[in-house]
Length: 252
Image 1 (spheres, helix red, strand yellow):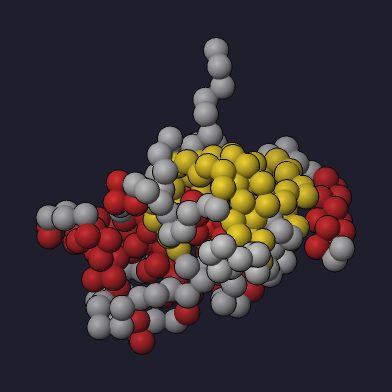
Image 2 (image 1 turned 30 degrees about the horizontal axis):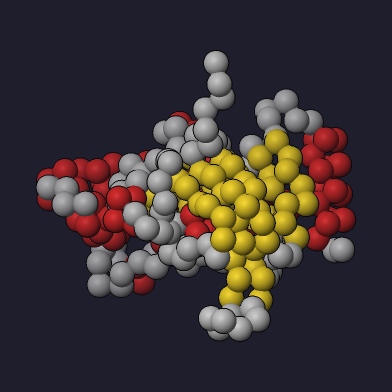
């Protein structure tokens, strides 16, 4: 039997920024090959400016590569952007909640865009808020919630659409260490329990080691320096060796 094709695939992808017909001002991604399998939790790690966000935006269909091919579930996310509605969910660094909507109203937003009936929207949004530990806060407005609670609402909103792919852009970086650690553990559990695929952008080695079942470390301009799988059998000593290896790339 042949191996299944990656759910997300970047093949010889380059992304250049500059004026048309002129020499490029900036090479963000340079002939990148990267595949992400169904059910994988990929931690994409690198220093600021290494191309992480550009890769994120190409997978999300927000920008197209200058050359090469990006496919998600066998389709072009930029040219077929509307097809991916409800199939890709994004969790941003900031919660991006609408201040005039309650917690449950914010979670319902993505379901409204999918034309889900009102009763089903409310039931689904409420269930995910309860799953994320926000029972009793369904009708609170964002200003009445802590930073960690607001990010829980943001995560509930992403899971509520039942999207197969979750794209996460440093969603816990603005939180204190303990809150961030708790939410990371919950997020990983929910991804695994619900069979989702996640690409998680971070610049924290600790976060990558806590979240990823695979760590890809980028060096500028978005070339893969390290591609390291992690399993439940990976020992603390092995993780420490990976940490030193990653540090050596990031400080180079």
